[in-house]
Structures are given as structure tokens and as C-alpha cells.
Length: 370
Ligand SMILES: Nc1ncnc2c1ncn2[C@@H]1O[C@H](COP(=O)(O)OP(=O)(O)O)[C@@H](O)[C@H]1O
Ligand SMILES: N[C@@H](CCC(=O)OP(=O)(O)O)C(=O)O
Image 1 (cartoon, helix red, strand yellow):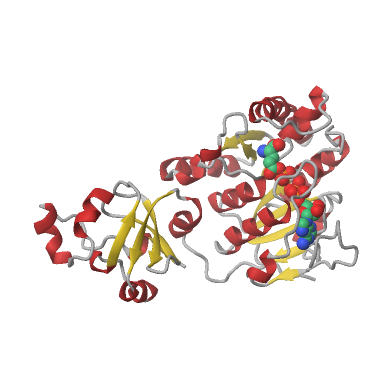
Image 2 (cartoon, rainbow, N blue to C red):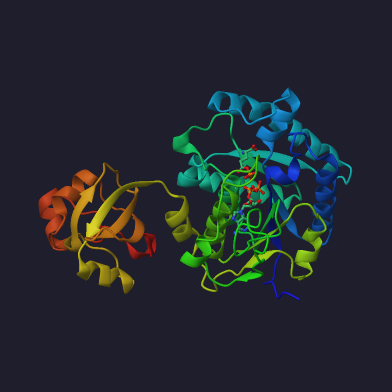
């Protein structure tokens, strides 16, 4: 048996390969079963949020495409057609058990913009409190590269942080993470537990994934990193066996379990590190690196140079002089102001700028340290 932490709030991500057949048509029997087991979880008292892929796949099936189109507008058109078909099905199946569903389509902007992030968090909280199942997908119809999450594994990790889930379950076309790509190496072995996501784990993700999938294993490991850093455990399991959902919460050793870190990042610091849009870079000297490692705020005197055009409140990468990332933080001065005060003592700021709003350039409470 697996000892999973006290789980009450679950996000379930279902990949395209689980929802659609190779020919692009939706696998109705499987979707129906998944819905039934989600309802079973809800009846046992769990809150459940669903992140469902499959819009492009379903659109392909509906419009008779044999292969994924190459152009973005065509993919977007297919997503628009397929998303309706998907939601229609979910609504039909969930309503058989008297459950309401809500469609939530998001883009990276909804995570990187703090105001939109908080709005999404508040509305999702209401949905869950009312026992409604949010069904989330990327808003494929309008996303362009700049505002795209790009894959639903990462999207489900951001969503898990937003709803403060305890567990993310990723249902895929494979049992979990193997020590090599099992589609190419038949003797590859399933890894049951990942204690820590390091370079060796990241190296295991090989190949781009299935015909309909986006990102393969690499995006699932990235999702695990985002989750486990926030104190959220993650499990990859096979979507072919929907009963896995029940076995997982019963503690059976299904799939690959990524243990969450004991020391959970607070919501704001997690957002700063993983979701906020980084608008610039500041380079700091070794003394400042030591200071932030000791959890001290960053002062102008330790800053050597800056890059980018940013406003007060922007999220900025912090690097040492050898270009290594040391952290991320919300800055108290714009790039224009900062260029005048870098290398200066805090008590010189007022004389230089004619005012001083803060002693610290980045307050430790607004900083994530690598
Ligand atoms: N080390 C590995 N362990 C398991 N699967 C791997 C590994 N490396 C690459 N893969 C590939 O990742 C695929 C799953 O990702 P993907 O096709 O994107 O699925 P989904 O649609 O569920 O997101 C597997 O079918 C497999 O081909
Ligand atoms: N948003 C896209 C899915 C993108 C995606 O990440 O797909 P998958 O790897 O199957 O989870 C769609 O609905 O088709």
C-alpha cells in the first residue's frame, strides 16, 4: 500500500490519447467510465477539478481529418469544434449523476497576471464549494505563442496550485514514468516512486509522445516539479483503466508517484517562481547572493547591472555575475529608476531620485530563492 498524504482536493488531467481513438474519434465508453469514477470520488467527499485535453483530437474526428493539421488557424478551428463536442459529452454523462459542470478556458496570461490569477482562483473556489466540476482546457482558439501554456500537463500543474489541490493525477496512455521510453525499449521498468526530481529523472523523458499527445513525458515531469514544490503530490497512471482513480485514493501502488516536498512554498512565492511573467533580469554580486541565501532582502548596493524595460511591481529574474539563476522577485523600482540607483547605498536613494519608496529593491517576502 502507498501512504499518500491526507488528500481532499484532487485535480485529474486526462490526455488526448486517453480520450480519443487513433482515428480521432472520442472514446465514449472510456469517458463515461472516467466520469462515473469521478462522481464516485465526489460522493466519497473529494473535491475534483478536471483538466481535459482532446479538443483538437475531437475536432479532427468530427471533421474527418486523418492527421493533425500543420497550420495554427486550422488547429484552432478544430479546437473550437472539438471543445463543444467534449463539453457536451461531459455535461451529458455528469448530469446522469445529477452533477453540474462548468467550462473554464485559460491561457498563460490568466496565470502570469496576478489580478487574473486571483480572479480565476476565486471563481474556481466557488465552483468547487458548490460541488460543480470545473472542466478546464487551454483556450486554444485564441492562444498565440506569447500567451500560451502550450501543454495540458503544465496547465494542470498551474491549476493544481490555483485550487490548492493535494494531489494531481495525470491519466495518460502509459502506466507511468519508466526508466526508458517503453515504446522503444521493451525491457524498460516502471518507476513506482520519485522522491526527488533531479537531472537523472528529467533525462528519462524521451520522444515527443503519442499521435495526439503534446509533450510526452517531459511536460509531465515539469508538471511534477511545479506541483511537488507547492506541496502537491502527483501520480501518472494509465487512463485505459479508469478504476485506477479509485485504487489511487485507496492507496494502491498504481503508476508513478511523485512525492511532494514537505516544505511547501507559500502561494505568492510559488506564483512568483512558476507563473509570473519575467520582465527583466538583474545581476548581483557575491555578497548579495550570500545575503539573499540568508533570507535577507535585496538592496541596490549589491546590484551590478540590469536588463530589460520593466515597471515597478514587475517580476524579475535574479542572476549572479556568472549568469546563474539565483531567484525571482517582484521589484520595487522601475528599470528607469533602478538604473540610477544600482550600486548605491539605500540612504543615497532619496537624494538621487528625489524620493524613496523602499529601502529594499526586492523584499524577501516577494522573492523566491533558487
Ligand atoms: N521514460 C518514459 N516513460 C514513459 N513514457 C515515456 C518515456 N519517455 C517518453 N515517453 C512517451 O510519453 C508518452 C506519453 O505522453 P503523451 O503522448 O503526451 O500522452 P498524453 O496524451 O497522455 O499527454 C508515452 O506514450 C511514451 O511514448
Ligand atoms: N488543448 C489541447 C491539448 C493539448 C495537450 O497538452 O494535449 P495532451 O498532451 O494530450 O494532454 C486540446 O484540447 O486538444
